[in-house]
Length: 377
Image 1 (spheres, helix red, strand yellow):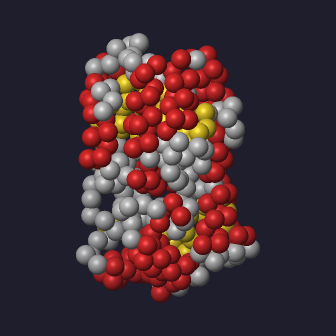
Image 2 (image 1 turned 180 degrees about the horizontal axis):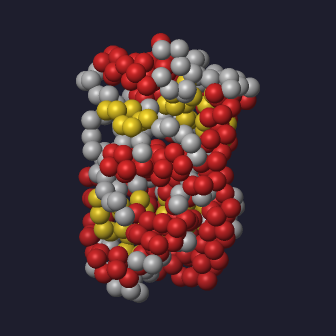
C-alpha cells in the first residue's frame, strides 16, 4: 500500500522499478494506492501488478476501501509505504488479521522538519504520535539506510532489531543505455556539446535545498561563466523564490527550469555534474541513480547519503546549507574533469556491487520471508 503511484515520488519510482523483478521471483504483487492521480499505472499493470485505487475522499473512507481489498485478496503480508498509507494500511491490515510490514523511507520528525517554513510543529507532533501508535502493530520494518533505522527506532519507539535495512536499486542496463543519449538530449535542450552542465533533480521544496544551490551557482559562474544549471522536478512551495533567485544569476540563460521530467536518467547522462543539495533525506535514491549513470556527484553530507556513496572517493561531500562550500565543490568538478571522472568511476563500481535492482530485490524477498515466518527479532 502506498500513498500514490505518482511519477514524481522516490518511493513510487522505486515501486515501478522493482515490481517486475519481484514478480519474477515469485512474489504475487497487489498495489493499493490512496490518491486518485495518473502515474505508473501502465508500467505496473504491464509488469503483472494488480492495481486497486482506494480514494474515498477521507481517511475513514480510504481505510474502509483498504479493508475491502485485504478481505478480498487475502494477502500473506501487507506492506505499507509513506505516511498516509502507513496509518490507513496498518489499521486495515490489523483489522483483517493480516501481518503488516512498513517501510521507513525518511528520518522524519527531526529538527530539520520543524525548521521548515511550510510545516506546523503541532501537526508534525500529531503525525509522529499517530505514526508511533500504529507502528505498534507492525511485524517488521524495512528501512532504506542504517541511519534511518537508528533514528526512526527512537522516534517511533520501535526496537532496533525489528528493522531490516535494504536500500533502493536501479536497473544498470537502463542507466547504461541512457548514457548513450548525451548528444540527443543536449540538442533537445538547446545546449551545446561543450557547455558545462550541472543537473539537480528534485521537487521544488524546502527539504531539497535548491535555494542554497541557486545561490552557490552564482559563485560558480564567476569562474565558469558559460555553465548552466538545469533543474528537473515539479514546482512546489519554493518555486517562486527559486525563480526570483535565478534572475540574479542570469535568468533562464543560466538556470533552466524543466519542470517534472520522465527522462531523468537521460538528463544525468547529458550532464557534467549531478548535484543533491538537500537539507535532509531518508536515502537520496537519485544519488544511486546518478552513481549508476556514471556522472560525477556533488552532494550535501547527509548521513544516509554518506552511506550510499561510502566515502568522498565516490562523491564530493559538502556541509548542509553551506553555499560557499557547495560552490567550491561544483567549480572543482567542472574544472578538474580528471578528478571528477575518477570519483564517477569509483561510484559506478560501488553501484554495481551494491545497488542494482537484482541485488536489492533478492534482499527484499528475504525480508518478506522473515516477516511471513513471524520473526519479530
